[in-house]
Image 1: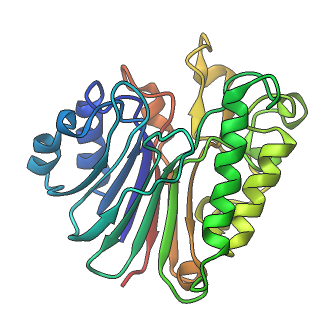
Image 2 (image 1 turned 90 degrees about the horizontal axis):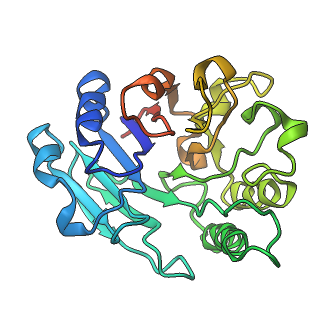
Length: 265
């Protein structure tokens, strides 16, 4: 089973890029974040024509929003009241083959890493804390086939950013964020697909700022996009890929897709 996640940063604007990605990489499932449209505005017909007829969408006018398009049948999906601000940031999808997929778009958190001064950062910390509580209360961690993926907006490890020392005071790599994400990771004994196959001493990123004059030359990236699997799937991980070349596509998102292949069912 080939699963991909991508913060598309407007699905209507980048539908042609998404369809090109699907043609070139042919995942069974594509989870999207920051779709920036309401459910009725989602380009469902385009994805269905490409073979992704099974869809789950939680959209929101102008901002946020998550969606899953699939070639595999979806049994059910749930839009959880997960975000305290009532943003559309989470979809729980159950496939007919028994796999559960959780698509998350964690708040970015603004620019000031102080919850007292920055309500957006306070919101982000609250969201990450809720993420831990959600899976800590579940008792099926060792047996349930569950995938958690999306734009988690945290680069947790030293080599998930271009400069650990310089990024410690920058939102997405501050100690309070990485600590909260680590707690959420431990709560369900997740396995990080990328870091299972890519050693922690190797730098690897999935996001490069639009602000860089030459993103590729400077290569000041961050690994903000993740795919985690539950213990039941830990031994089933077969491959991972971060599609860096897509950052160079015309009018691309500042994020690129992350792909995982697992043996399931």
